[in-house]
Length: 183
Image (cartoon, rainbow, N blue to C red; front, side, top):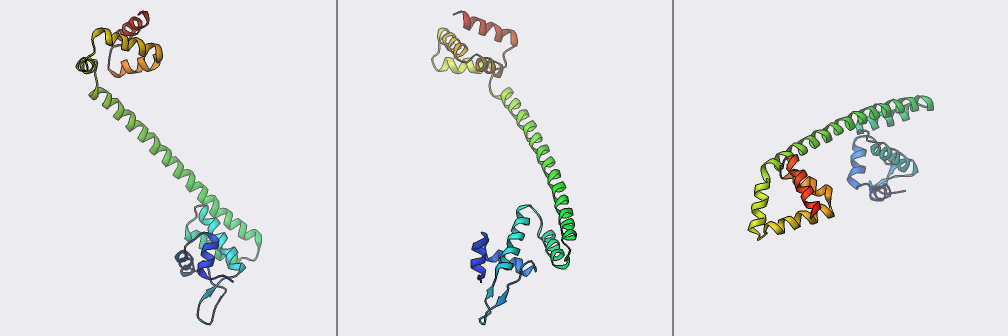
């Protein structure tokens, strides 16, 4: 026989969860000791494990109560399985809806991020600002040319993306990249 605390540990739950399940009528102690302590046996452990399995599947406590009550009332195995299957199928449909909603949320967030990134790019940096920063840092025209050449040689795709980020026209980007390759 197990006490409330030992039963809770056995199933990885808190003592208060066991007592809450008892208050809902999902679980009953096998007996009470002379000192009025609850004790649970194999049957109660199996029942609690079934409750945990249903919870792990995302069923509500109300659904679990219906399932557990039908298991007690229905002596025919097929009837119990059909009732459980109906509840589990309903939960599966609910999960499909929840996943669809979450995917819509993902797409909405991705759209917001792409809009924000595009807005950030238009407001934050331009070619003129970048050149001004490099000049303030002491870069000469030759230094900037060397910088472009190294960037083009080591990471051409990133160089292209960076030039686009500066809102440089496609024709000017082509000229800069061509000029960077020749030197």
